[in-house]
Each structure stands twice: as structure tokens, then as C-alpha cells.
Length: 449
Image (tube, rainbow, N blue to C red; front, side, top):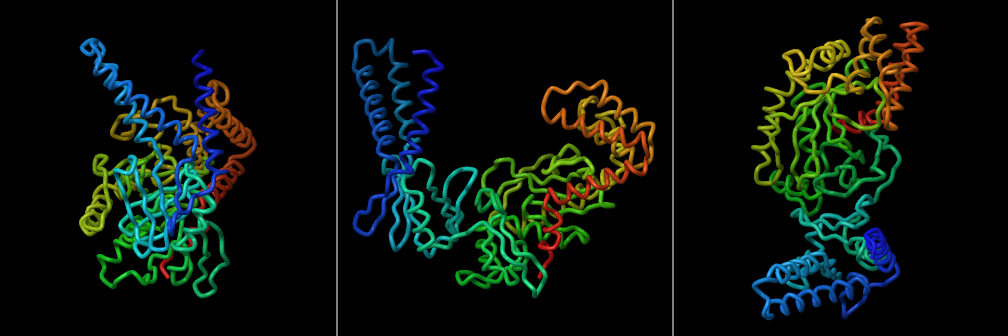
């Protein structure tokens, strides 16, 4: 069979199993509702495991074992792999929820009183149930009866919905919950249990205690870890650095200088385990239009140290983070937090004292920042030099490069007409970027009630 046909059949099988999972209903045994993998997937994986174990045993007992031992090892390894990919069985009852893996060899159980919350994870196409300890149980694409599972989670547990509510007249904050993102209760603070905030603000730094929460600060921190370990950390950083605001969507505490340059500290999760992050100081020119943060002008503090927040190390971790910000982060931001500083930085040769970064000298992103920065500083000669390079010499090959070139052409055309008009154009782009990054709304939300 041709290789392309094999790949096509495998992809088709994956989609068929996902569709089967949507169509098949959960089974109820006694007082337990069982959510398993769809029947077809169980048959396939079960047959594969049995066949591979049988094949490995046959080779092991054959006279050619010495020569073909690698075949036996390979088949046994594939059987173990298939067993590891078998979706866990999930059982839901009035008392709690359990998960069994590895064909029943491993079991995890949560009582409902120990469950912090549950929610849909859109980009993983799953439903996460998170205990107060931080442990999770997941209903995935390859589990049957998604609707039934969600219904039971809403019945027995605390369900987090994405959506928007009206503003609260008492404090002027806007209640909001992000409309997308993973409820990765360590990694993604965009899902909110709004009932637990005294003013309803999604990022209020002082939530009212939950009934399960004891007055002890240690208990309170553990509860926050089960829902969002970063909110309190960001609030502490802002409190220790007057003038900084908090944006939980981007795991960010920041300032905006002259309405043109964003600078601050972000918790760079980078796909790490729960509670882990890199602490990065950075600046971003808002007059270069983007709808996301980028760290071209950033630096991981403490030589790229990987931080981790846990209930047992919260005070030590917080002191270390605040110390790194004072000794290394704030001095770094002083070098990059204005248009003039960015213009001079990007003009200097990379890898030198004036420019410690190691970009390629012809990096179009850096040249675009430099060109617009020189416009805002008022240096038309340098701005024209860079804009002419981007519009006449630079050859784009990707969609984002063509967009960059079109922006540069618009700025160059405006600069030919009038410098002040061009500055107004870039200032307008900066205002649009603030809105795209959702910093306007979060300015209001991030204040302490």
C-alpha cells in the first residue's frame, strides 16, 4: 500500500473515532455513569495489544530468538504504547468522579467536595475537572457523550462559563470572562469564577473567601492555585512597583509610556508544567501593529531561570521574583521603554554593549521598529533610509512579510507628505494595538476593589 494512502487511512480513522464518540452515549451501571472510549476504538486498540503481545511471545519462544529478539522487543514496546494511548475510563456518581488508566491499573478519584471547578478547554477540545490540589481529570475528544458529561459536571460541581456580564455600578469594573482559551487552571487565568469576586471584576486582586477556604493564608494560596496561581503573583508585582498595571489575559504587569511603548514583565509559560514559568522583562512598540505580545525586545531574568509556584514555596518564590525584578528587570526596562531608546538600540550593532541582542542585522521586524521609531523621534533621514529598504530592497516571501512591507509603504507615502501627519498615523496605530491587546478594558479591571 502506498505510504500516502496509509497516512490518509490513519487520518480518516481518527476522524471516524471522534465522530463515533459524539454519537455514542455513556452507559449507566448502578449509580455510576461510565464515559469510555467509543466501541470501535476499544476494539482496535484491544486487538492491536493482544496481537502484538502474542507476536512478541511467539518470537520469544521461537528457535530464532537470538536473531529476531529485536522484533519481540519492538512488538512489546508497541503493545505498551497502545495501552498508554487507551483513553481513560471516567465514572461519575453522586459522590464524586474517578478515572482509570492503563487498563484499570491506575485509578484517580475526586469527591465532589474536593473539586475546585470544571470547564471546557476549546483549543484542546476537552473538558477539564480540576481538584483543589491541582490534579485534573479530562474528558477528551475520544470519550463518548460530551453533552452528558458537561451536564453532570454542572449538576454536581462548580462549572465555569465563558461569557460577558454587565458592569458593576459599585466599583465601575466590568465583569468579563475570556471567550476562548484553555481552563488550564494553573496556566490560563482567562477563565473566572465571577461569583467569588466581591465586585464581579474578573481580575480583582482580593477575592472573597470561598466556603471551602479557611482564613489561613496558606490555605488561601492553595485554593488560588487550584483556580489560578498567577493572579495573586501579578497583583503582588504591581503593588511592589507603583505605576504598573495588571493584565491577567497575557500574564502581564505593565506600563505604557507616552501612549507608544508597552513595557513590563510577563510570565512566559512556554508550554511548561502547571505553575511553572519564565519571568521575562520586555518592551513592545505599540506603533507596530500586532494583536499579540512579542518578546523581540525582551530578556528572561535570572539567566533564564525556570520558576515554579507551589503552595509550599509561595513566600520564597515571591521574594525571589520581586528581587529579580528590582535588581535586573527594572534596570533593563530603563534601556528600552521609549521610542528614542528603541531607535538607538536597534541602530546599534547587535551583540555590543549598546545592543546586547543578537538579531540578524537585516531582520525586517527590527528594521520596521527602527524606521517608525525614527519617525516619532523626528529623524526623517534615518526613517527614510529604513523605509526605502523595506519597500524597495526587501523581498517578502511570506504573508506577514508582505503585510509588513505594505505598512512600511503607507508610512513612507505619508512621510513624503508631512512628518507630523506620519506621527499621527503611528500614534493611531498604537491606540489600535492597545485595543487589540485588550489593555484598555483590563486597565479598569486590574484595579483593587
